[in-house]
Length: 446
Image 1: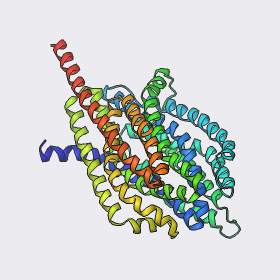
Image 2: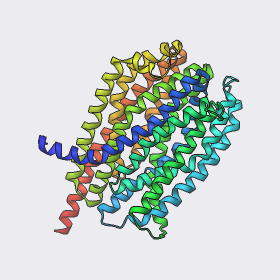
Image 3: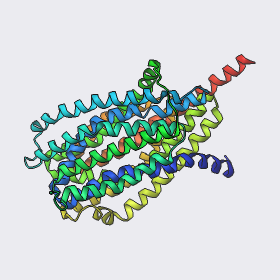
Image 4: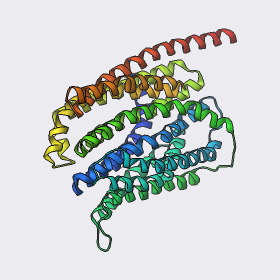
């Protein structure tokens, strides 16, 4: 591919990805703000919300994974020259039903905290945080669904500006509610959860008003739409859950050993998630562009967007890896002054630097498969890498080899390499099959 063509496809992807990057960074900075404020409040508060978010994320991510099927499906519809705007109300109904199911799932998990043997001083804070977070699900899902809907039409600027503004709103609310201000008492972990509750509903309703302002919708019912969302979304959802449970189980497992390990895992995951938002945005752009090309049967465009997106994603994460390995003390120091947290976290950032590169590759590959509506392989490869390999290997290194949290991260690096190997092999095969099918169709028309 010539340099001029590469720049063309990169520009097309960045037109979608840049606002999403801005919004994704804003979204994760909301979580980073929680970690920052919690760490300044106390190490116990940070440990408690680390465990609570690890559990709630594993549950709430299931619905987010299903909602993530909206933009690639509607992009395929647009590529096939089908009407996509009429799926506005079905998208909202789908997200709200999911919100109801997930809310009850989070509430049902709260009594189980008593049996997981966390430190007694952390248990009340964990329960309070999860209770409020459960009722915030509707706001979060409304925002996620409408952002996906608009993304399918390549409308990405306003939704992500809302997210950026919400970063500052969240920090202000956190400071007021966690530490207290005037007549408002210090609320600790409850203040963090309350701030997140307000921000999620604010983001959801902002996008709802925006959608009604720029488009006119009619009520439409199409049960095939829900079936297609489930067909594409269930593998995505389970794949994300597999990955999330793998990551968050580390905080839960090590949190039973000591709350300081859960705090360290949350701190490290916050850092890596900030950088991950860039390739995730590129992956979203890939899914939209590949989805449109796939719907139009344009194998040439599909392959070009896939290749350029992979290069962009891995290139950024290589740069990120250099930053993580060069300034580990500075990065950890942004969140804590606790010497024990420094001792645990800093050595892991060197391991994390290697993980970053393969994490950028796998998320870009997932975007390609989403656009091609071939999401089952994403589930299978994630399950193989994270559950069949990472969890047993990480546990062995952590406890049998006495490497603790570092052992889990070495296991993650090996799992990520395995994941990328599987997905690359399958992608090559799928592209050959797709090219063959198009040639057959062309011959038949001739």
